[in-house]
Length: 408
Image (cartoon, rainbow, N blue to C red; front, side, top):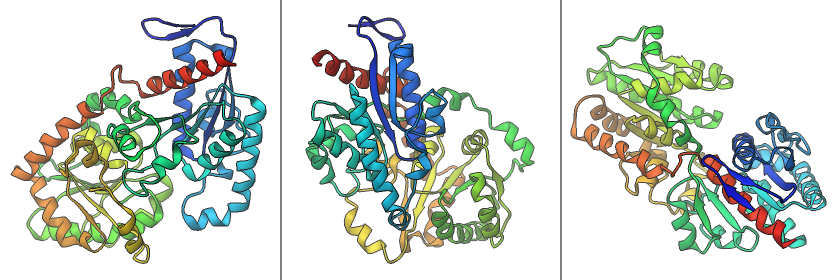
């Protein structure tokens, strides 16, 4: 039985619980690690929790032993996937065989649908009695909406990270979906208390100048396409009589590329690399010039007004325009249900457009006030009771596992 206590869900008299967890890349590995910790905390299973599957360093720190290195399948982009396809296919079949032999009470596939969904389909075909939970919904609300209904035969439940996803799956005929919360909301108390002044002092920023945080993306292709228009946007801002301080957070392995491409900018950006300094930069910034992606949620939870841009390969752009069905690609807009934060794609991401949208955010203005009002709504829209997404996810996984165990 399950006995609820003040801070846990204790599982009594049921013996061990066997779970297969399958992550296909590093963000999924982080989610998997938090899920393992929450399963142990919420259910007090201790050594009775038996795990198998695929994960990385984060999951291994929680005692997980991966069937093979995550690097074998953590490849991104069509060309990279194609190049490594024979190895990925071998890993898919080996993972299925290992999962079946482990005889789990539930399987949790974590993001990376190109890798995890073929595994889920094959497990379902061979063992339809094993429940399969999909942690992180594919972006069916943005493109290829038909995937939602196609998932239903092999996925029993989706753990959504975004509050609008349950309604999207219901509308599209997908599996049952529960909003368990984005991992970012677990950091909200830390973010609210974070003081940006140590970074301002360390960098010697001029307090009379507005601060812009520039975020051209983390992938080299994103950085390569956005650094030049971002630099030209700053040039136009300066020509309008505004000389900002520019902070540019980057991951260490993109530092050299960022430095090289920022040499043509009209001013030298302050490059920051740690996660804490990134969020300090967000909190002190008057506005952000950002690539579309998860960073728009990070900015939203930090309360930072933003202008969003994105560029893809010109050859792929017409295809993507036909594929994308969402009214916006900005996650913060999707959470709000309105396009509060301007976005510019492809040829529309011209520096003239970006500068025109950015300038009003650097001073008191109706545009800035409107964004601040929208930003104030987002934490409430993303809130879950208790505020711990990994624990909400663990409760659903345990429920399926125990139903399967009782039926065994």
